[in-house]
Amino acid sequence: MKNKMRNSVMRMVLIMALSLALVACGKKAEAPAETTTAETEVADIAEDTSAETTDDAATEEGTLSFILEVVDGDGNTTNFTINTTKATVGEALLDEGLIEGEEGEYGLYVKTVNGVTADYDVDQTYWAFYIDGEYASTGVDQTDVVDGSTYSFKVEK
Image (cartoon, rainbow, N blue to C red):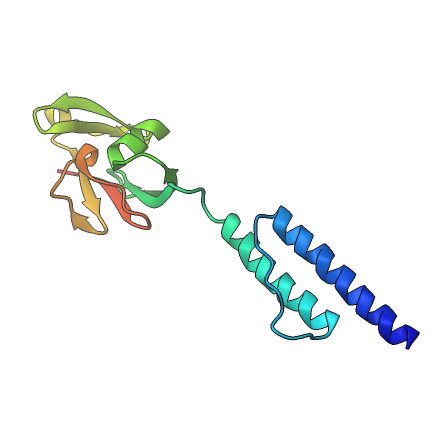
C-alpha cells in the first residue's frame, strides 16, 4: 500500500514539475485524458517540447533567404546565401555590399557585382539579372525577395 501511494505521489510531483516547466516555456500543459504511467507522460511531454524547440531554432521571423549566383566574364561561378529582412533583392544586395551601380530612368543600373565591374560603355559587357534561371523582366531594385529563390548576375555581351 505504501509503495502504491508513494508511486502515485511521485507521478503527481513529476506531472506538476513538468507542467511548471512547460508553463515557464510558454506552453500550456494539458491534463492527461486518463491516468498513465509516469514514463509515458514524460515521453509525451518531451516529444512536444522538442518539436517546439526545433521551431524556435528556425530562421528569425520576417527573415527571407535566397541564393545569389554570380557568373563573371570568365565563366567562374560564386554562390552566396543571403538572409535578409529587406523587401527587394536590390536592397538586400546593396545592404550586403555585393552590388554597386547608378540610378537611371529604369531604376538601379548594376555595374559591379562582388567586386567585378562590367561596363557596356567600356567593353560592351553588362550584368544580366536572372530570377530562378529566367531572364528577369524587372530590375533588381524592383524585384521582391521570394524565400528560397535563386537570383543570378551573369556578365554578358
